Image 1 (cartoon, one colour):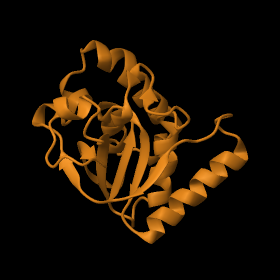
Image 2 (image 1 turned 90 degrees about the vertical axis):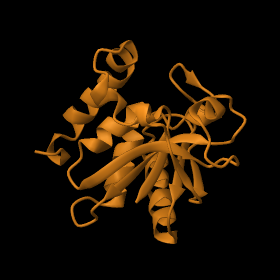
Image 3 (image 1 turned 120 degrees about the horizontal axis):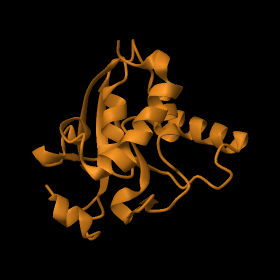
Image 4 (image 1 turned 180 degrees about the horizontal axis):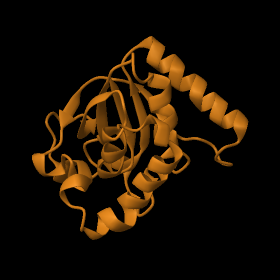
Length: 174
């Protein structure tokens, strides 16, 4: 299981849905103090939650490290509490690690990205122990797939999905 926040969960979900070895992806909330928050509560910025995706994957088909490499390629980990026009703590870049091994893998990948100078700016991605995940409301699940004509999908999500599909064509589902 991987729990990742990189801006709006609508942008992350279709990428991970398209990966070979991923069993399921669910949009939701993690990292806050309010139990079972609503979308409206999370958007207020007062719950401490981030919008996240929880990725259930088969490690025999895809590694946690590959999931993290893709995660870092589909969002900007250098902007604090923001992705594009989405601003607020709920849009922060964050990895909720489920084990010491996941924490170590994330630290190693972030160190490699820093050493490579991939971003040219400091990575601000938080590395936080996983506590609890709250599924988002049903209308948020598979949002991109169910709303292909929506303006946000066309102008924000579709370019990220297209970039992923080009960059990771060999890792996509058949």
